[in-house]
Image (cartoon, rainbow, N blue to C red; front, top):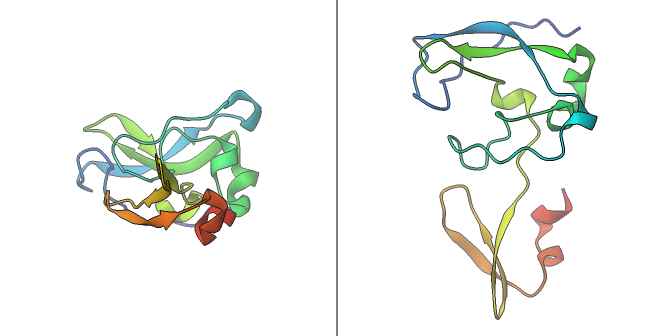
Length: 122
């Protein structure tokens, strides 16, 4: 089991670390997770609403419990960014093709196909 001390990342909801501590969290099994909705608190973040499928492989051995972070002020548990797989890229369709939507909301160049984006291959 990977028992490294976690870096205190700010709570994705309140953006503070004052009420954050390490806590053992129960995580969804991969088969029980049909597809978590993206985090409403961190656009493009894979750190909330996650399952074993959403963790990097080196953290699989900790399931169904993982050492994560918990904010007592917001009552949410989450994992640090370094434990989560990157969120898949998002695209906006248009009549001309597709545009990549970046985490800050800006749009990328026009693509004829999503497969033309190198990020879609990850």
